[in-house]
Length: 233
Image (tube, rainbow, N blue to C red; front, side, top):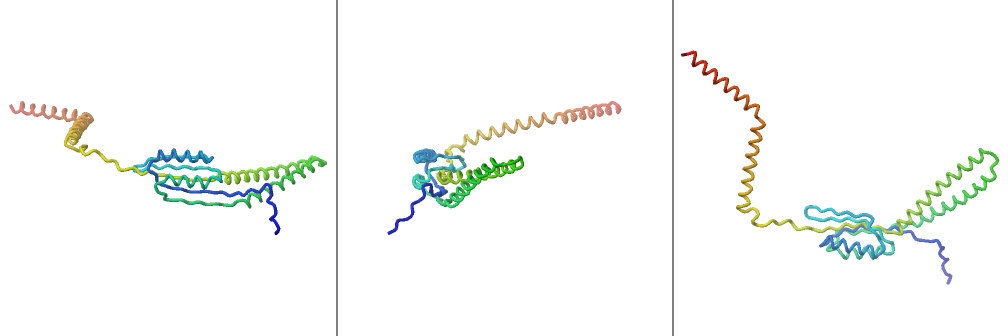
């Protein structure tokens, strides 16, 4: 039986793995500590994290990067911290073909660039030198762009991404039974009455021009009345 051809030494499957996990926990703080330890022990790291406390809920969001070979293990461990899982989606994308193609094109351009350097040595005038240098510059930009794409693919494939959201449900606030008793109501009524007195004083102070005008009119009417009585006599 004929053996299969040997695998090239530089062959490396480039598979991008992603997951979305949403779950409910009983204690957000203790679960958060356990999650951080699980991420650390699997060689990953937390790229971003946030916590929001709403009326009856604590919501935590994390973006976790973990080595691809530890992806399934970490996802399993994270699910184990949940009281219940509301969403769990996983995707895998094989970008090996794009990786190999981009790498091959980059290597071909590097060989062309080397030939242009040989042409540059044989240039006979300044115009030929400038033309060859321009071609070399264009090739270098394309090579750098391809190298950036290769590094990007390798990074995404080497470290998988888990977008984790976990919630803690909070119980409604229960107020003491005597909070709205007689003494509470009496205290609030006294405070309300005092606020009404304060408001009345403020209104009286603000309307002092009207009181001054009214006093002047009253004095004028009183004086006219006295003059009328004197005339009659």
